[in-house]
Length: 481
Image (cartoon, rainbow, N blue to C red):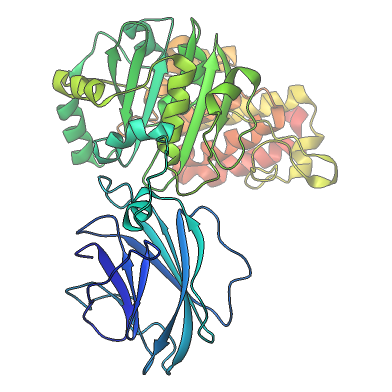
């Protein structure tokens, strides 16, 4: 796109046009020219060819104008002033005749933002008819028509537009915490305040190892602590939010390159809301006011930026470009030892439906579900910890003091718990053994047995078949073990 315009034309050249009539589209021989906000660069264009007029007028667009144009030969293309290289080549029907074109535009006033302009062109064959203006709401259109510009306050997320072009643009979690200090926030995240490292060195190490091991950078802003994770998500997890909010409030916004997001709020050690913000967010009273005028159903508004607005409203502090610059100038980060995975119950609803997250049916490799559910809880617990002990034995860790103590106590000792957490890192050791021990502590006895067996198979490696066979024998003759 060049010269504030692009066109839907049968010819390659885009002529100059007068947009003073409707402020958006001008009909020219063989097509129509559309006025853009940005002078040079890229805009997003969608095009639909219909059999007849759209059933209704689309919402969410600032300018909508419908015009008639006549095709001399057909096969018009979407082109720019100096090029016909477009994936929208010869997209209209390949025959002459009269057509209607409905042009939708949004973001023409946001010329300082890359990829902020959107257009949709809708074409169908129809007799010539008068122009129809369905919407005229942007400032540019008013200026082109010679009308006074409307008073349009900026949306609240405008203050965070700088972030789209920052080092946090693609994937990050920003957490804001009140009522605490940097050292305690680091501990709540699972980091050691006494072990700072260069952010650049951490990033280089992770890139070299192709690892996503978590780490975090901190900034004390007086009345709050900012925690920034580059391509991380620990601040969006319930255990971290619970710990970090113990003395006040915490809120976080996570996003990644796949457009997955998570908006979270916690207060005094209680997680109030963790949600992928789509549509109307069902929020508890302490959070409701923070979401006012943030329309997460409007896919043209930026969810991550609106989420940061909500974080700021809830905690009283947001992140600024200056804050991020200070963090990066300091070049100090802290590696995180992540929490162990959450243990979920496996309780079927009547009719076979399950409560909670969508998880596999109750089953362990080689053991029928009925065999597990038929065992009394004490025997299920015995089976579970025997499986965990066998996993350790097959892995050559049966005499490890921390593992032996955990099996004897039927819970992870403090030292074992830390080792289990460290095992989840990319360079961690004996991950499946520690996962088996962790899963054995699940309060749900059936889930404990099932999930422990799943992990124990991998810990046992080439001995997995023997482990499964012995577990089958246990369920058949439990009193013999």
